Length: 323
Image 1 (cartoon, rainbow, N blue to C red):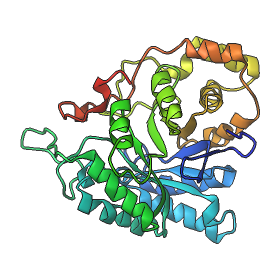
Image 2 (cartoon, rainbow, N blue to C red):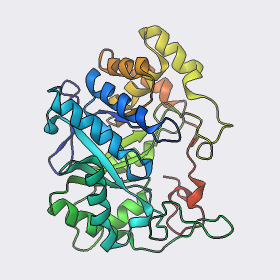
Image 3 (cartoon, rainbow, N blue to C red):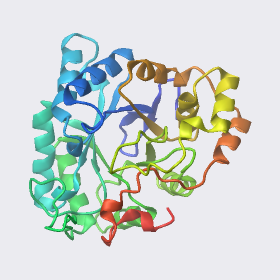
Image 4 (cartoon, helix red, strand yellow):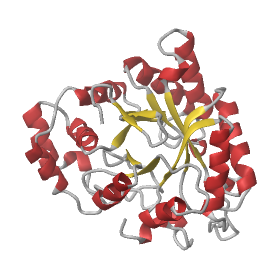
């Protein structure tokens, strides 16, 4: 990983910036704010933007990108944009139309990376969270390998430069890697990853297959109702992180981000506070010592902020495996 260029090479030859801006879902901020904070993130130097169909703000994020291209801040090729295929579009014939819908919302010709968002297939249709009369999610059964083949076709059609997965465990990754006639390996696996859930086994597995691990919730998590377990400790108040931050005269958030970059993980920083967004760019201004890294490794206690219990009961629910 070349920290100077601040990019990592993917297994298909493309490059991904090591620090990304996670666009915030509308539950957390109004859509209009997604437009403003994304513009601001680009202005302060973010070139990697992570979004998804299910965040329901791709129109605003696309608008932000186009306005920063229009005013000369960036060219399209400077921006690395990730979108994700939602669980209701896993049937192979729905994959390309789903990506085309994202592109239409974004008003872009291609995305840089397209991911399978979460391995649990749900009933196809316009409803993003299809539920029965008892309020239970309606699942679907789709072979993930067939969904993957449809993603490969999207790459061949030039709609996306790279393809990958998100929230997959090592067995699900293996299933794709061992698929007969595999054309493209996943370039990455985007998962929850932070000092309390450092994913070291999954990271080793991914590295051994030349798959980049991308960390979301790298700063713990905002307390989003219904998604996040509110009983977990607040990561950024951890005394070990705070002590290391004090030593380097940085914030605990910067230490948590820097930790990921030094272990070869691409890290997403999410937020709608302009001061924090700007501050996150300081991750390249300092280095953690081997002792710091070891102390942070010691914080791992397998706390998952996003347990994504909505997928429990589906045979492809990913978190029943250790990694």
